[in-house]
Length: 414
Length: 208
Image (cartoon, rainbow over all chains, first blue to last red):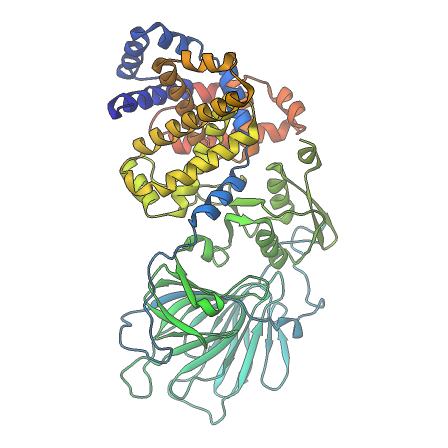
């Protein structure tokens, strides 16, 4: 079939669709009329354009599992695996002056999480208006572990000065915001470390002694010093965090003091940047995503420089693999959203578990069921459940703090 | 990939790649852009399967053939510069694939009537078949942002003209859910189609 012929057929199909959805313009109607007048069969096609038959075909088409097909085709072709660009390799310790302004880096990593040490059920639940339900969306909850071993529950603490570590004053600005302030130039003799950790269903925002901002996602922690001295700034995290690192001069007074984030076996080196870190132990693989600027991600086996929009994933002996994820999806948590793009049921449930503080009980094998979509993190779990069930594939039941995940029976029979 | 604003209580917010530029679309496929491939499969796979199923009378064979055709398309992706050529390739492959399967079967079963029927089909039929498939694909494309359940409700309401009560009964949902889903579907369509056309037909029918 020649292109011109084909082009016309496709245009006719488009017009037929338009005639179903809305009125055609005069010229469009003319085109369709002309086509129908050409051959009797054309006229029949239009006249026989029985909505019922069309609906049957559309409904039958719905029975095909597009997600499973996509997986099959992707597996056979390798689409979705190929890195977008060959990452440039650099020595892990080498850091040149490529850095220009603020770089924004998203770092998604896997590491053991230690927040359990500080977490307990004694943390008061956010009761809010939803008193009837035991499960409520997460809120501004975190525990600060001071160098002397004291723990401060930030949700219960009142605003204002909480404590002092060396010269750094620890101030709760408002719900969900903690800041470390110290007088310019002053340096106390002793560097001590604090840890801010969020439980499941918690999140918190922290301003570090150098003015850098950190957003902590649920079930996460960050350990940091009360002052940054020496040649570099170094913090370590578990779970997920987003960083906006301020550029400050290093000891030579010229170059920016490097900022290093440790998560599991990986190190992310930046020279002043904004970046987000996620280091959950239950995610598979370590993911680092750069939004703006440039960072170096290092591991004992390999290292890679990321460009904006790129994401690296450690693949064991194969080293880093670089791809381009959807940044809005990666950043969704910080912006108060859930966004899923062909997310497996497991990874979706893991996120719900963290934010709504529920345990997931898989009653059926849900492998191969994927979801796309989004919702506000302020929405109640019941709403999310309703939307997921409406899709027709899953059946969900909430019992106390346990979310049971089953296949939809009516669907199984079908 | 962009997502619509939040706060609306619907689920899938799948946003399509740039569909208006078919050259760009073909280039994205050529570059193995996963999002564009997903979209192509989402729109075309069920429709092609349905077509093959009607010819082969065997849904499993239809799926195998369609999967194979997509893999073949991928192997040849460098040759296509336009979405038009890609569609043409898909339709031709499915049709030929079905014919080959039917012929192969016939060789085993000796000749029967179906063989003769196939040969009676003219180009004209092929044209009309193609228009039918493309029409189904075009409708799927417009309903792409819907969840499968929302799509089902929409098709029953709009194409089958079923009432909320009938749909609720058929799908085992509450009337209110059906109403909500219809309203959400309509708002999605409005968002997508309004710049193109005013949707008087659909609005009237769905809000009835």
